[in-house]
Image 1 (cartoon, rainbow, N blue to C red):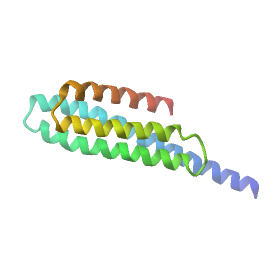
Image 2: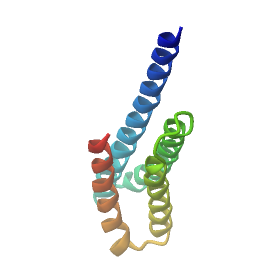
Image 3: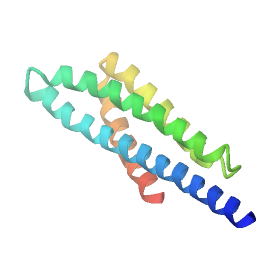
Image 4: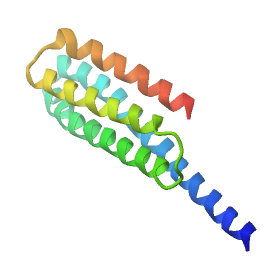
Length: 126
């Protein structure tokens, strides 16, 4: 009986960890696609629309990362570090959106590069 409970708990923890990995991968992909759409923004008429829609998707992916981090942490009582990382990404995403709306590319672009690098690092650490 105890073995079955332990196996169930282990399987549940692995599912939460997998969800966290998928959330980080999705966030990394959306940030990369934002860089691509930024290039299109400079070279095509539909780039602005693509970048605007991509910003919303990237922000949603950052919120999903926070949710996945909380779900991976709370039930098992593990380290809250992934929650802090995910929350930090959400703050950076919020700043990124504000800078984009305000048309401040001198900070918006380097912050996007930083976010992509940090997201790749988070993905590699999982």
